[in-house]
Image (cartoon, rainbow, N blue to C red; front, side, top):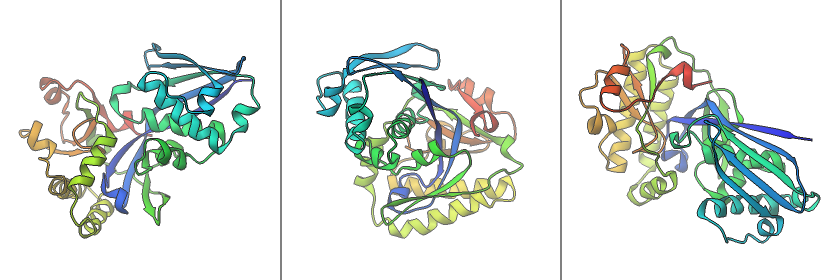
Length: 302
């Protein structure tokens, strides 16, 4: 009997990087995500196929159960990463493999892989659901990170995410202002490696506790903004704080200095999506500069 699991993608609006040190992070699950389809197989083999949003198979591999059990890293980097995740999951619940004849697995993304909306986190959450284990523990044993992406994978509403005493805390928040029609998400034509971005943050951060309160204030002001002016003010202050910590020029100054509106980096600075706020339709502006993927808020967010 086939089973299907699904996880949401993610966008981190505030608290990037600093969430690792206890800051409040405002995050939004996306309409896009990833499916994991599981059916019965044979020969103690996991037949794995991964499909893009265009239904192209980009990963097709047969993995012997023993390869997973003993974490034999004998394949390509992508397959070895998958084996490592499955090995960690197996250690937490061996019965999923020990009591099975085999599996046929298909994963299906509903967004382009290069968008950076969580192809890894949605996979980890789906595997955790399949094995019946804690997705945060599986994430931290494999990719690392704050875990906000797992929280988005599991929830269908805006969240406030924090790490308290090493434990993830997710709180449902209300965010449905009347200015969402002025919010857009623009893909920067390159995918950022979140692990390397986090390492860079660790190398550059100074006394981070001094800025946590300021970041939290920005987050609360953004969530409670009664109009677009208050919202943009909170995001611009947040952007300036992070630029100082990371010693990086904000993306608006780098790429869009003549843009009439606000632009904020999201998640791992330097790639993936940015949030743009504009009183007028910004599609012509970004398209002229070579950025063709521009999604209005309601086409991106649940």
